[in-house]
Image 1 (cartoon, helix red, strand yellow):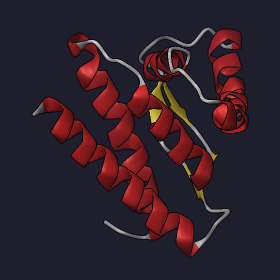
Image 2 (image 1 turned 45 degrees about the vertical axis):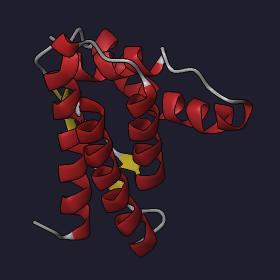
Image 3 (image 1 turned 90 degrees about the horizontal axis):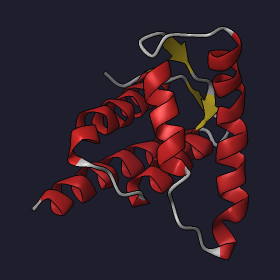
Image 4 (image 1 turned 30 degrees about the vertical axis):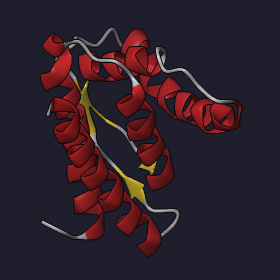
Length: 130
């Protein structure tokens, strides 16, 4: 039942992002995460097993997130400090797709959901939806 709920949320996010991507392929979304959430997302991405054909997309995701991780480190941001990401819609979709495949401890479910919700809200905002 939990997997069904996760898949439903995931499919909603993917469909939302796909609709936005079809409107403008180079559209930028700007999700806001805390520094702690971003580090969690990157650590989660590091646990994903990849297939050979996914390596390029994964490297693109890691490269897109790298400047924000460097900002956290350089500015010594606290875990609660907000960071606005600026990502192409395709990169954002790949982030969510790879995160969906990672295994999450129950204790991290709320943090994971906040990240997904932030991406969804940013996609809606970029497309003019409320």
